[in-house]
Image 1 (cartoon, rainbow, N blue to C red):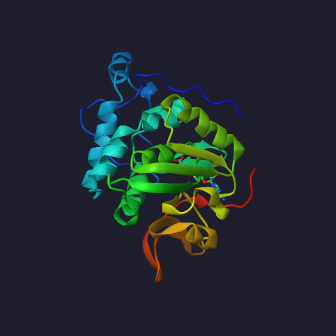
Image 2 (cartoon, rainbow, N blue to C red):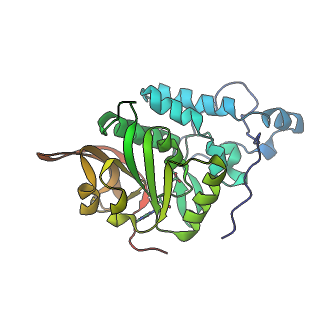
Length: 264
Ligand code: SAH
């Protein structure tokens, strides 16, 4: 699959006509107006700088309860608009999941931030306050892997769909982040070569957490993943591993794409 054209910099971001942060769309509500809805001068002025949009997204995340300063800094440091198709750039800093092709989605910023915060609260940290090695299951477009790279010394990110793996490669290339390793493979088996992990995070949910993930988690490490709680229902699960065993906590309901086996 050819990589879609990446938005240039500065990107065209539609912030709406007012100075206020875009209201959070209600579930099922239509997405905010695209650039084409703005008048030409509006679009031109809005095109200049994606940073206010990102800063507003971070404000919204803080208002919604994300309090870890490192996570907020990471969310403010990564250009989400560089990871979506150009037609979706105007929505890049809204709190919505967006399609990235092949029926997959880039997770909502609030979910990425929430999972990163959970990982930071329980994962193994080095003297610099960063997490050690992290396994990211379901690279997709690579956005979350880059967010995690701000918080961890190394990120192993695995994707089962070749086209998305390639897309993530293309998205990451200009960023030149040596600490992110992209792997094409079935993440259900984890990635043993990078184990043990200070943290494991999954962006796709199955019926249960694969044993391999727990085995590859370091003692003192934390895993955060969506898991089926009932037919058609998912919740976030946090698993902390210690030498005494594992402790599992089920948190709020979420809605992730399914975890599938094999490479395609
Ligand atoms: N973190 C991603 C979200 C992508 S959606 C981002 O920031 O864009 C979840 C991804 O998990 C999809 O791309 C899907 O193909 C992938 N996935 C599902 N099952 C998988 C598996 N067994 N191994 C690796 N990736 C998997």
